Image (cartoon, rainbow, N blue to C red; front, side, top):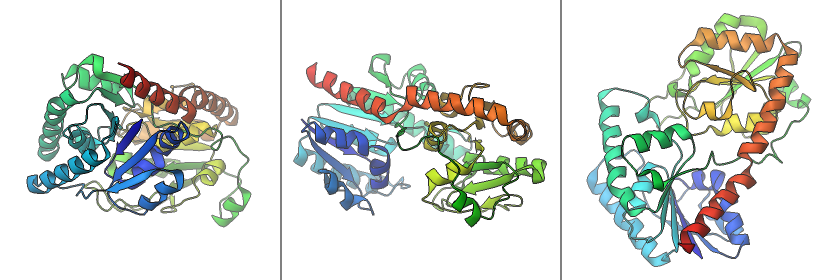
Length: 368
C-alpha cells in the first residue's frame, strides 16, 4: 500500500502523525509526506518516509495563490499515485479533496479561531470553510474528527453525511514516555522556585484564545499562594497574538523540556476557548496531574469534572481562580485527580490505541 500524508506544516506531521507513519513503514507500506519545506522536512527520511515539497501561504486568501498551490499538490499526488491520501488541517483537507485521488481521508484536528470569534471576518471565513468542505468532501471517503463536538457540528449543519464521519479522539500521547515521575529538582533550582508553595503551570502559545488573560487575572486573585508558571512562544503570525503584562506569573517563553516542566507542577491549567484536543492536556493527564480547564470543545474530552480536574466556564477568571485555589489547598484531592488523569490517558488516548484505529480505518477503506 502507498499512503501519502498531506499537511500545511512539516512540523505538524512530524510531531503529531509520525507514530502512524512509522507503524505503516513497519508494516512494509510506502509512506510519503507532502508538506512545505521546513526544519523537519529532511528528518522524515530517517524513518523511511519520502518527502515531497509544495509551497503554501498559510494565511493567504488570494485565489491566484490558492490555484497555484492546488495545482502543485495535484501534480505531486499524481506522481505518487497513492492508494490512500490522508490530509490534515483545513486547507490541506480541502485542496487534497481536489487531487483526484480515489481514497481520501480528511482529519479535522480542530476548527480553529474563526469558529470562536463572531467578528465580520471570522463569520465570512467560517462561511467559506464550511461551504468548501460541503463541496469538496463529496470526493473524500471518510472524515475523521478528534472530538465529538466538532463531528456533531459538521453533521448537524449538513457539511458531511453521518456515514462519512469517524471519531478518533486526539492524535494520541505516548504514555510510556509521559508518565508520573518525581519532580525534577534541578529544574526547580534553575527556575528559582519557592519549594514551600505548589506549582501551577500553563503551556500554550501566547494568544488570547488560549485563555492567557484569564490565567493572569486568576493569578492576581491568588497572589502569593503558589508559584505560577507559563510556557509558550508568542505566535506573531496569529491575529490574536499579544504580549501581556505577566505580573504574578513567571513567563518562561518557548521551552523544549516539556516533560520536565510538567513533572514539577502540582496543578496544570488551560483556560482555552476552543480546541481540537489539546496535546498539553494529554501530556499532563498522562503524567498524572490534576487539571483545571474550560468546559470548551476539545478540553472537556480530556477532563471529567470532579474526576481528574475541574471544568470552568470560558472567559471566567474568577471561577478559574476558585478551582485552582481548591487544588492548591488540597494535596489529597490533587493526588486523587492525578491518579484518574493517568488512568484516563492510558485508557482513551494512548498513542498505540490511536494508531491502531487509523490502521484499521485504512484497511477497511481498501477492502471495500
